[in-house]
Length: 148
Length: 148
DNA sequence: CTAAAACCTGACGTTGACGTCAAGGGCAAC
DNA sequence: GTTGCCCTTGACGTCAACGTCAGGTTTTAG
Image 1 (cartoon, rainbow over the protein chains, first blue to last red):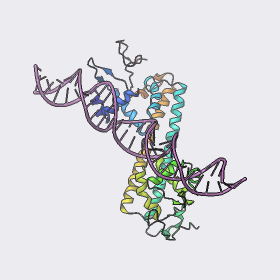
Image 2 (image 1 turned 120 degrees about the vertical axis):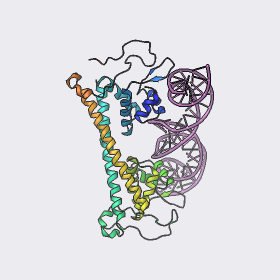
Image 3 (image 1 turned 90 degrees about the horizontal axis):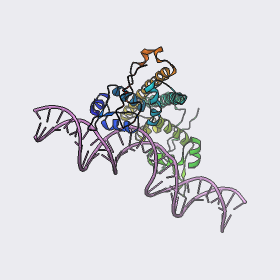
Image 4 (image 1 turned 135 degrees about the vertical axis):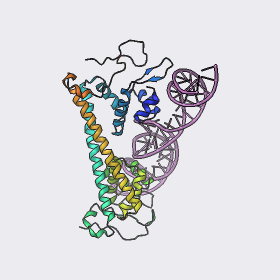
């Protein structure tokens, strides 16, 4: 397979594939003319790389994990990285969940024309400094008293 | 509160706070001398911004949501953005979960000294092209028979 | 054999959320 | 007043994963 085929099948650009090679994530044979030749498995490998990128794993870390992918063996170092990344992903999922909850909260609040309908939801009390202008505080005394 | 206090309490740098202001995410009063003054609520607001950043929401999008935070009202546009971001976060969580599963899979494989113990796990078959050299293929006919 | 398509290397550009440095100005304590 | 810390604006640097362009070579289709 040539680079364009792999790119198309894996859904990435050829530039990306050359970048992966530059980073040591992907190797390729060369034709006598100097063009890259990939085995079928490269597509799957690229998909795996993409999956890690999508999960926020930087290329250097992926590189550390590659020996494990290739040999099926894990040094203690590799296990350490694996566990660390696993933890990082779990934490990232938690942060995403929290942010999503915040969004849900906002949706909830914004859905009610009369906020008094559910005052408890306004706990965090985002007090608007100046709802009208931007810098000039012309003193509309709204001031979310945040009572409770 | 001055900028240093807010920074410390919210756990960010003063540079970050000035950046937020530059992006329209945070406003501040000014002392006669030109120094920024924040209300208490700024700390909470910064934490919210940080939470969104951690969830991958870019500043422009956060800016679109700010009217909702300030007024508790939502225009149709704001609802559209809210829903889109919610979907994006859900998708991101799914990708994270998938990547984490891939890691677990690798941990699983690498934990077994003898891969024959569970051959089915090696389905994807990452064949090493040339385990010895890097670029110079001096024709060692090793050719990864993937045996073992 | 030739023309088009695909590929090559090299190098600079992009984006976002800041870090960092420089050269000054404000503010409270002493 | 003056010392010293905190603040100001402005501007350039960073890092990652590519995008994009230029100029040339290889492969393929007819």
